[in-house]
Image 1 (cartoon, one colour):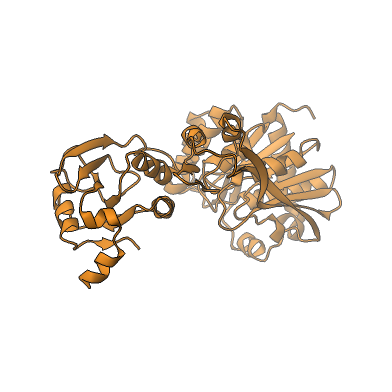
Image 2: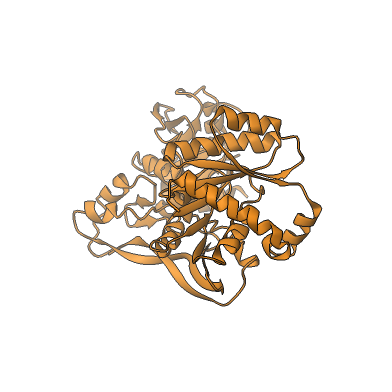
Length: 283
Length: 128
């Protein structure tokens, strides 16, 4: 089963839920935790340990000046403005390139070939018995989150139980993370801002065809608006975590709630069981 | 000071006859200058001597990204020698620098014609 943990609004508690869910489940079955927030991965704060790190690269075009006659076809073809053809040379903007390879195909002189360009790294570690952590990290200055997310998910592809901790929001990195998942936990908080962004996130899961369930975090007991929204949209509230200074303190130390307060393990086991039925996975 | 500007000018600029591109909010020389380059609704191409003009609608104005280089390529295809705008991104600047197109900044809120007049009077600053 591939399970995603996403939100909408940032800071609702995705990593808290993903980390504690993974920790609890790893005690009885092998779990692969994938940190898909490749701009700001933070699962390593809860699961430290030595990791093996490799480069993630994408192909970018390299133009042979000797063969190029500045016909302009590569620049015309490029949808992203990455190639500008001047009278005496071709300018290439690597940060705009989406590695489609189209320029190499349309060049009539076959003057373009591709070379790998590093955009970030992929790290694998085994912080606990039964738990593997795969993290991606985008290089500072690069904007290509999606290829790294693709690479880390690919690494976990054949593992039996995969939990993907998503980035906040609803744009490309989140879509890439959710794509292909069997279910998605949307972690929200009962504030107008939280609800506003939850609506957007629910819309994304619906369009992707990923069944979603809600976890209300930091609840002050006055969740009526969020609850009403869930009822109206046929969304199950899988779990409600109360606002608690103690939980906040445990989190800020980089500790796991389910380790410091083992009684929470049954709540996260119950959450896992609900996710499995949401995903339509047999026990 | 004027001599220094003159000395840095290209031959074409000294002759005073050149194609100037000014970013605009409308399709005529009395339209207000658009400060942004890549997302300007129109590019007004003017002969600096005769003030004859041609309006080019910017097909990239609503693009998601990479708009600067694409718009710059469009301008280059019209053999423009001088560009006047309010705000140029790094990529567009790189294209124009490499192509030898001089870039000037106009942000006084006037029309395309006002900007051209200031250019001809040498009161516009070059883009940094």
